[in-house]
Length: 302
Image (spheres, rainbow, N blue to C red):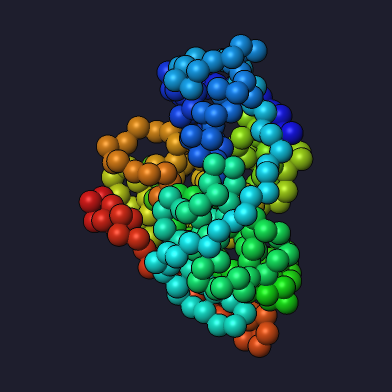
């Protein structure tokens, strides 16, 4: 059983406990969090509470996550946006709000459920029954291109490229504030936050090296449209790095939580391009996903 504590910030004061935790426990549904609260696995200042209890600044949330049961993950027919497919790989354009692989509270409706139906079970098994074919992931509210491996041979070859940082990954994002420099590089190590174990943070002592290159595409009155290229692939890397530079992503309630007039579902972040050497042929393969409609419309509004 995993156990950690979270201290409520001033910014989250007044939010319902279940809503507060749903922002941080990405991949876990709000209904599942409510069950944990009702069963006493989540307490506030060592007292049991209800899901609608309001957070107060400085309150200490104690969270226990039970050992997950291994469910029978079912194939589900979905209208997946397939960008490229062959006998080894499949590139998918993941929509906003879709969880990549099953987790407590999200055993249906994930990308894996759809892939099991589409591929007929032909997915690599290296990461187990919960994450068949998944060699890397993008956040639930991040859109864009994701590569999935159909067999263990391709999985090992793609994983090796990920480990040596040779995969080409470009993202598009809208950040708060106006960036002055046309280009820049953020080279700051990232690790689990010591103040809030549900978040990642810049950790100059114990973090892993994380490098993000960015360039300005367009400046607006109070926002900047940028392209980011990842040299490394740490969890929430772009979100953490831009927040550290005081330019959090628009819509990011976890690392920014700045008021905005736009009604958004999470961060404005899109995985635009993914390029790698094909695991079987060795030829370079680069696949791109178009900007989602909400993102393109937001740029027009700005």
